[in-house]
Every structure is written in structure tokens, then in C-alpha cells.
Image (cartoon, rainbow, N blue to C red; front, top):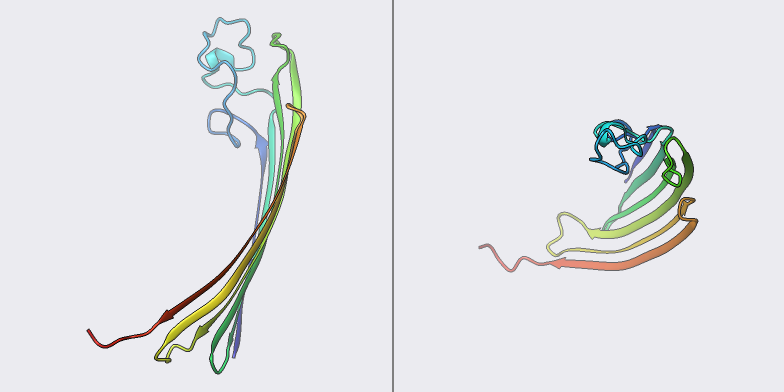
Length: 173
């Protein structure tokens, strides 16, 4: 007896960044400056509803997973693998040397992926002693590039775990 469950998610978002609920949202420089401030051309009227013109965000997220169950004579073997990938691309337009009307574009991106797998063997539901044993593994990689600060960051991590549980009824309470 073998059953399979498979899933997939994909999300893509893009558009201008904004401070008034549009786009992914940012906080612009100079919020709260008086509207007469000559240096406030980026955040218009004291930063109440402005956005740096040209700032954008383009995000793509994807995840796929499965659950495989195999009923055996001693119990159920379950394997749950998954893979996810995320790409975030942005262009932040900011004040260049804080001169009115002079902007600089700072592209950046983050790319990451993660893989996980869990395998467990659980006793049959009608067994007197209930038990489960298993293992879990995940690995993730993430790369971040930010041109505004001329910085690259690489992160790599992994985790491993083993687990077990035993339940025995001592009597009716």
C-alpha cells in the first residue's frame, strides 16, 4: 500500500516600492522634514506620501514538496522531501550626495535555496506499543549582493537530526 502527495507553489511579485502601502514598502530618507525643505525632493511634502522615483522590487518564490507513505507489515514509512528557491531583485534609487534632483540607482539581489528531507518509520496504529523513529536533514544556501554598500555575502548552513518516541500504555486510568 503506497500513497503520494505532491505540492508546488510559485509566487512572483514586482513593481514600484512605496511608503504608502504600494509595492514592497520602504522608509525613505527625510521623513517628517518640513515641506519647504529644498532637499526634500525625494520624499515630497515632508515624506508623508513620497517614494524615491524608480525604486523597484522583483521577487520570485518557488517551493515544491512531496509526501510518500508506504504501509509495511511493521508500520508506515514516510518520506517528506522539499525544495525551495527565492530570488529577490531590487533597484533602490537614493539621493546622490544629497543634491536636489540628483539620484543614484543601487541594484541588488538575493538568491537562495533550501532542501529538506525527513524520513520516519512509525508503528502500526493497532500495535500495543506505539513508536516512531526517523531522521531529518536540511541544507540552505543564500547569496546577497548589495551595490549600495559594495558587499557580497554568502551563507551556507545545514542541519541533521535523529528522533525517536516510544509510548506504552501502563493501564486504563
